[in-house]
Amino acid sequence: MLTQPFADAVAEAEEIIKGAKHIRTDQDLIEGYDYLAGSIQASMMLAWAFERDHPYFIQSTGPHTKMGLDNPDALYFHSYIRDDAEYVVTGKRGSTTDLSFQVLNGDYSPVDVPDSLAAFDDRRIDIGDDGEFEVRFGPGPAGPNYFTLAPGSAMLVVREVYSDWDTERRGLIRIRRADTAGTAPPPRTMDLMTKRYGVAGKILLSRLRTFLAFPEWFYLNQPVNTMNEPRSTPGGLSTQMSSAGHFELADDQAMIITVPRSEAPYQGFQLGSPWYISTDYINHQTSLTADQARTDPDGKIRFVLAERDPGLANWIELTGHRRGYMQIRWQRLSRELGPEDGPQVEVVPFAELPERLPHHEESRITPEQWRERITARQAAVHYRMLG
Image (cartoon, rainbow, N blue to C red; front, side):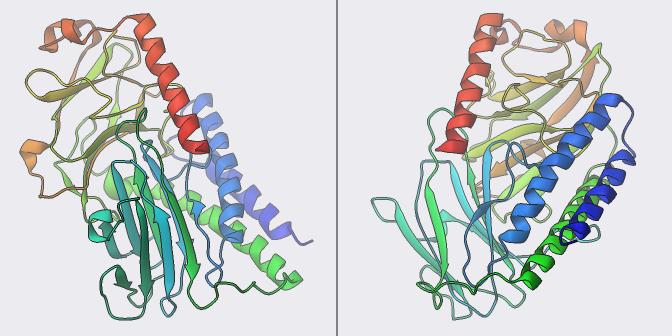
């Protein structure tokens, strides 16, 4: 049967989910099955998008196809490419805080992170007064708006990153291979269909195994309830740094994360579940950018992680997750960050928050104001995904 390899992969993937080491509760398993559903969707999409001769951008991850501690503030797009062909990327710059390009030499695997062969943001390209741009990637020599593809180049990744969800708007982007534009790919064959169902199954299994292993490489090797100093993001952008860690909190505890508000155009904090994906950032405040968060008079942002509602503007909802991951990203940097730019972490009894937060009273928010914040989040994400 044509689809049998993919069906077998789905059955194996279910066993991977059921056997995940972090599962402790029924809710953990339910979230795993939800993660599996999104991964199945994504794997089919990725297998059918492998068109290096007639390429197009697809959304790499989104609210329902999550992976790899996806950033709630970002739209991710990618296209497959060859290192010996020339590609033309055209578009119109939106008003997002950051627009970046990255060339990878492969995909993530359970044993490796792909090398970043090139990474830059739109400060490196010429953009017209109307926002229009054209960038070329190919084997030729580098020049204005032309970037040389290193041997092994296999994927072009584009990120649009929002800091103010309410006002920033996405742009437009498209890709074509210079020497095949205006032509059509050959007709589909049964051999191609057989191959793609098989590839979809391999993508699914690799995706799950990779990102269950990923935290052990970069997160779980440090003490719980701590965050490291700002560092270059593994496999990430050259203009990005991050600080990360993992947490475990009891219901009567809260975590205060204090970090200076940066001069970097983008600074964002988020939570991730034990499945190493973002938690529900549409219907809950599980992430905040510097523009969304309240900054105290001393120039610092104080995030409060707790299961119970503390009635504070910078409450980060745990949504039933006693354990998980946390990350701060800084993007579009113009300098290296040092320890003084990074976060300080303190776990305190929930009842002591008024005494532990230096600007507690000014940070308070009413239930009505909170509901307005969530309503705005829901609208902003829906607009972003459909706009």
